[in-house]
Amino acid sequence: MLNMIEKVVLGMAAIRILSGTLEITAALFMLHFNTVERALVINSLLSIVGPIIFFSTMTIGIYGLSTKLSFTGLLWIMLGVICIVYGIKK
Image 1 (tube, rainbow, N blue to C red):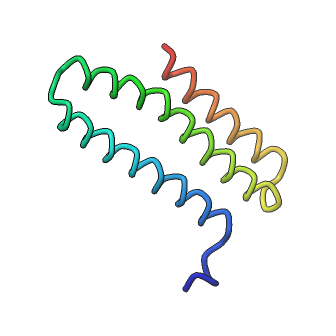
Image 2 (cartoon, rainbow, N blue to C red):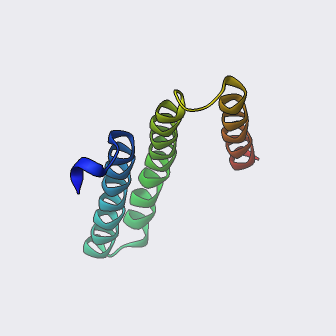
């Protein structure tokens, strides 16, 4: 089955698995420390990791599509990503 999975998809999935592992680990640390202050610190660290994961998976995905899409198609995808970032910041 592994031979059938595209390398780009495998890379994107691996980053998402890493992200999920970090989320579960953070939740376990919150339970371990059992204070609101520590939980907020851990949560703030996760807020830094989230955008990095998002941009990493999007970059890998766009790279994988770059040979299959037209230049105009890639511009539309990048415009969509820009809109997502703009919406997050506002």
